[in-house]
Length: 150
Ligand code: HEM
Image 1 (cartoon, rainbow, N blue to C red):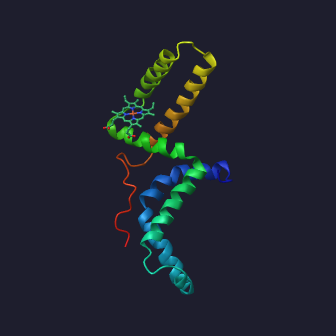
Image 2: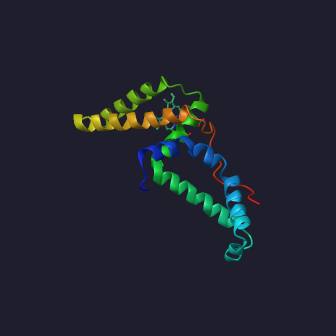
């Protein structure tokens, strides 16, 4: 985890969707701006920047994950996709009960502490998915390939 304060974490969580949606432009602007302001740096880099832009975007995803946690990012993205499937907030408690019941049935010995832990974990999962559903994250699977970058 990167060492950042909760306010920064919150701001990154609120903006990662638009940053990722804009990643191709961002990577282009970054290198263009860098070389425009400091042309002497251009010679350090390969002529064709396609691969480097790809790595730059990969690194942004890693940094976002390190700031908010990879599970948070993936669950918020999944929540947005679920909104696209037509899933409503009131469906989540139904799925929650179905999963807890399935767990109980496959572990009939019944450990109340275990069940409490899974219920709490599931609540955190659902909270992240609902945040994603209410965000501006894409409602369809995101194509992580960058397509043409030049
Ligand atoms: C409890 C939290 C839930 C988790 C962790 C979860 C997880 C997943 C995952 C991993 C997929 C595969 C596709 C994707 O990632 O977009 C999926 C698909 C799906 N989920 Fe969920 N889900 C949850 C809750 C729900 C609820 C409450 C509903 C509505 C009743 C629902 C309905 C669906 C549907 C309809 C698909 C299939 C979409 C398609 O392939 O067209 N899910 N879910």
